[in-house]
Length: 134
Image (cartoon, rainbow, N blue to C red; front, top):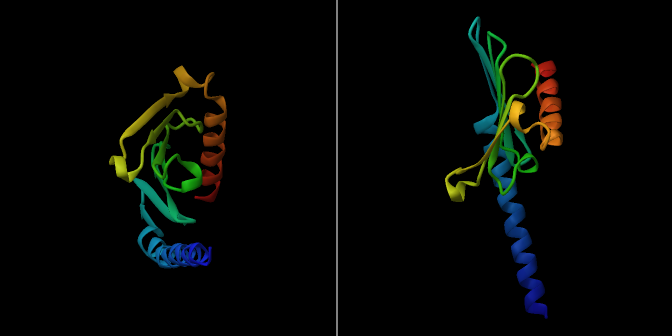
Protein backbone atom coordinates (compact mmCIF):
# COMPACT_ATOMS: atom_id res chain seq x y z
CA UNK A 1 0.00 0.00 0.00
CA UNK A 2 2.88 2.36 0.79
CA UNK A 3 4.39 1.62 -2.62
CA UNK A 4 1.14 2.65 -4.37
CA UNK A 5 1.07 5.88 -2.37
CA UNK A 6 4.67 6.58 -3.31
CA UNK A 7 3.90 6.07 -7.02
CA UNK A 8 0.84 8.31 -6.75
CA UNK A 9 3.00 11.09 -5.27
CA UNK A 10 5.66 10.61 -7.97
CA UNK A 11 3.03 10.80 -10.74
CA UNK A 12 1.43 13.90 -9.17
CA UNK A 13 4.84 15.59 -8.97
CA UNK A 14 5.64 14.68 -12.58
CA UNK A 15 2.34 16.20 -13.74
CA UNK A 16 2.92 19.35 -11.66
CA UNK A 17 6.45 19.77 -13.04
CA UNK A 18 5.15 19.22 -16.58
CA UNK A 19 2.56 21.95 -16.16
CA UNK A 20 5.16 24.20 -14.52
CA UNK A 21 7.44 23.81 -17.53
CA UNK A 22 4.63 24.07 -20.10
CA UNK A 23 3.04 27.28 -18.83
CA UNK A 24 6.00 29.67 -19.42
CA UNK A 25 6.75 28.02 -22.77
CA UNK A 26 3.10 28.34 -23.77
CA UNK A 27 3.15 32.05 -22.93
CA UNK A 28 6.42 32.67 -24.78
CA UNK A 29 5.22 30.87 -27.92
CA UNK A 30 1.60 32.01 -28.04
CA UNK A 31 1.28 35.54 -26.66
CA UNK A 32 1.58 37.88 -29.62
CA UNK A 33 -0.15 40.71 -31.46
CA UNK A 34 0.30 41.54 -35.13
CA UNK A 35 -1.48 44.48 -36.75
CA UNK A 36 -1.18 45.32 -40.44
CA UNK A 37 -3.13 48.55 -40.91
CA UNK A 38 -5.87 48.31 -43.49
CA UNK A 39 -5.50 44.52 -43.84
CA UNK A 40 -5.83 42.53 -40.61
CA UNK A 41 -5.08 42.24 -36.93
CA UNK A 42 -4.01 39.03 -35.19
CA UNK A 43 -3.99 38.41 -31.45
CA UNK A 44 -2.95 35.22 -29.67
CA UNK A 45 -2.97 34.64 -25.93
CA UNK A 46 -2.63 31.75 -23.52
CA UNK A 47 -5.61 30.08 -21.87
CA UNK A 48 -4.41 27.67 -19.18
CA UNK A 49 -2.33 25.09 -21.01
CA UNK A 50 -3.80 26.06 -24.38
CA UNK A 51 -4.20 29.27 -26.34
CA UNK A 52 -6.71 31.33 -28.30
CA UNK A 53 -6.08 32.98 -31.69
CA UNK A 54 -8.18 35.87 -33.02
CA UNK A 55 -7.80 37.12 -36.61
CA UNK A 56 -9.92 40.03 -37.87
CA UNK A 57 -9.75 41.23 -41.47
CA UNK A 58 -10.38 44.80 -42.62
CA UNK A 59 -13.68 43.76 -44.26
CA UNK A 60 -15.03 42.58 -40.86
CA UNK A 61 -14.55 38.83 -41.28
CA UNK A 62 -13.25 37.09 -38.15
CA UNK A 63 -11.58 33.74 -37.55
CA UNK A 64 -11.03 32.34 -34.05
CA UNK A 65 -9.05 29.22 -33.15
CA UNK A 66 -9.74 27.89 -29.67
CA UNK A 67 -6.90 25.63 -28.54
CA UNK A 68 -7.96 25.68 -24.89
CA UNK A 69 -8.71 22.30 -23.31
CA UNK A 70 -11.94 23.68 -21.84
CA UNK A 71 -13.21 24.74 -25.27
CA UNK A 72 -12.42 21.54 -27.11
CA UNK A 73 -12.83 17.80 -27.03
CA UNK A 74 -9.83 15.52 -26.44
CA UNK A 75 -7.31 18.36 -26.65
CA UNK A 76 -8.09 19.15 -30.26
CA UNK A 77 -9.09 22.61 -31.34
CA UNK A 78 -12.15 24.40 -32.62
CA UNK A 79 -12.43 27.05 -35.36
CA UNK A 80 -15.10 29.73 -35.49
CA UNK A 81 -15.70 31.83 -38.60
CA UNK A 82 -17.79 35.01 -38.83
CA UNK A 83 -18.38 36.29 -42.35
CA UNK A 84 -18.80 39.82 -41.04
CA UNK A 85 -22.32 39.92 -39.60
CA UNK A 86 -21.27 39.58 -35.95
CA UNK A 87 -22.49 35.98 -35.68
CA UNK A 88 -20.46 32.79 -35.96
CA UNK A 89 -21.36 31.24 -39.31
CA UNK A 90 -19.17 28.09 -39.24
CA UNK A 91 -17.83 25.92 -36.41
CA UNK A 92 -15.29 23.18 -37.12
CA UNK A 93 -14.05 20.71 -34.53
CA UNK A 94 -10.65 19.09 -35.02
CA UNK A 95 -9.36 16.06 -33.12
CA UNK A 96 -6.24 15.80 -31.02
CA UNK A 97 -2.61 15.98 -32.13
CA UNK A 98 -2.50 12.21 -31.77
CA UNK A 99 -4.94 12.04 -34.68
CA UNK A 100 -3.11 14.81 -36.58
CA UNK A 101 -5.97 17.24 -35.90
CA UNK A 102 -8.33 15.14 -38.03
CA UNK A 103 -11.57 17.00 -38.77
CA UNK A 104 -14.38 15.74 -36.56
CA UNK A 105 -17.26 17.85 -37.85
CA UNK A 106 -18.33 21.08 -39.51
CA UNK A 107 -21.43 22.99 -38.44
CA UNK A 108 -22.93 25.82 -40.49
CA UNK A 109 -25.40 28.30 -39.03
CA UNK A 110 -27.83 27.93 -41.94
CA UNK A 111 -28.03 24.14 -41.75
CA UNK A 112 -27.18 23.27 -38.14
CA UNK A 113 -28.30 26.10 -35.85
CA UNK A 114 -31.53 24.37 -34.80
CA UNK A 115 -29.79 21.18 -33.67
CA UNK A 116 -26.72 22.93 -32.21
CA UNK A 117 -28.15 26.20 -30.92
CA UNK A 118 -26.19 26.09 -27.64
CA UNK A 119 -22.85 25.69 -29.46
CA UNK A 120 -23.60 28.61 -31.77
CA UNK A 121 -24.84 30.79 -28.90
CA UNK A 122 -21.65 30.09 -26.90
CA UNK A 123 -19.54 30.79 -30.00
CA UNK A 124 -21.43 34.06 -30.60
CA UNK A 125 -20.71 35.09 -27.01
CA UNK A 126 -16.99 34.32 -27.43
CA UNK A 127 -16.97 36.32 -30.68
CA UNK A 128 -18.71 39.24 -28.98
CA UNK A 129 -16.20 39.21 -26.09
CA UNK A 130 -13.18 39.10 -28.41
CA UNK A 131 -14.60 41.78 -30.73
CA UNK A 132 -15.00 44.05 -27.70
CA UNK A 133 -11.52 43.21 -26.42
CA UNK A 134 -9.83 43.91 -29.76
